[in-house]
Image (cartoon, rainbow, N blue to C red; front, top):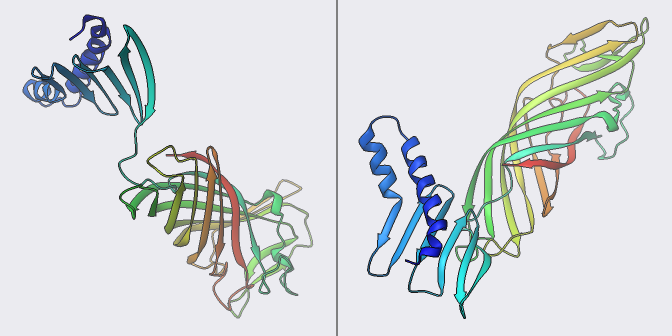
Length: 305
């Protein structure tokens, strides 16, 4: 092995031994075996390799490419030609399909009326919304991918689990109540002035998305598009009203919010720009127990796991 590449190999060797020693505290013998498992020497090919989670290095004497350092999906190759050493960086193909679901999302949430327009039916004005201040915050914390194209790894199915909080800012002088018939209505507030009123609900959601990546996972996928359906169940909700005189009123009473939701989701992304949109086929309230409203949200991904 050429001495001038030893300075590349030795630091990786020491780092791998340190990582191997820290992986388990059960016994000295287990630590030593883990360290040795990630160090390989091949005397016949005059090749040595050291690897540890997320990275590896290979040094070979009888080859134009005398050294390779791989970190994640990038590899630096040290090539010796005409008594000169050049460095080339290449992208390592992804071994399996990886979709886009897990991460942190932020968007605007709203709802459409029974005629699928933003205008509400007569008598439903207590659900008038301040669209600019109604937000949906999502953490998709679990993802599972199914590869549908083994050769290119750019088409697949995505599912998982996510948690979304919908914060609807109501723009009115009403309190959400249930009348004697068990139907949600708005009780007018006449003795105080409302400064802020909101309806908050949170759901656990499960998606099934079909995703295609462009150009493919075998190169550096810079764009993707996905679409599918999702379903979820409500884990909490409350209303909160703040008055101009400083009084506050918060309630977790049942106001007939739908305990489940289901709908369609669409995503599109290019490099760091990732947008999404959802539309519920289910109503905000239980059928026939409140205004017929269909929630939707539009936003972007802030962080991808």
